[in-house]
Image (cartoon, rainbow, N blue to C red; front, side, top):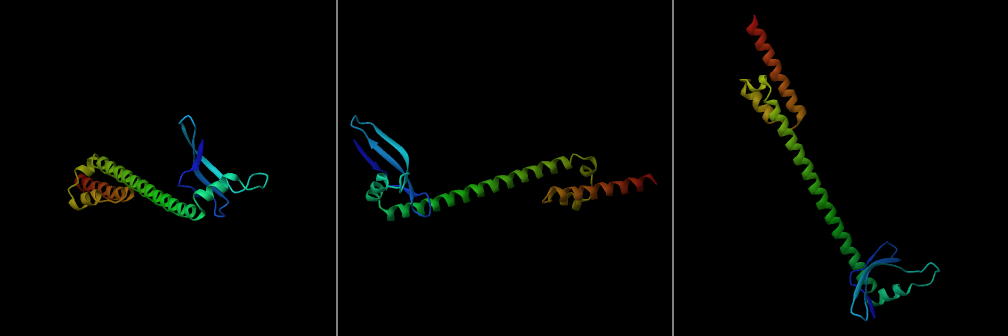
Length: 152
């Protein structure tokens, strides 16, 4: 039987009193078992953990520190990419929602039949639903004025 640590352990804490690694056990029957292995420096009774001694002998403190730095940078990069994708999805969903509102706005008879091209352009170019609603209100007020002028 042969047991050893993979070459990618990292520190679990800043004090460097516990590491995390993949521990590989090659059995005599040819089977291989890999398991995630936390490796604390001390056992509960206060004695030095033999796995700790083996880990430092096989990998070394400098390599574990280097792995930790690489892992931290990779995790930060992944988090930033995830956040960026999430923000892009939210922005895209917001734009789709606004586009749907603009389509519904032009289903309103007064907006659809508005002859003022500038107002119609303002509705189409609105950056938010509040801005769009304000321009629709202007169109509706204008149509009321036209209706009042025609009824006189």
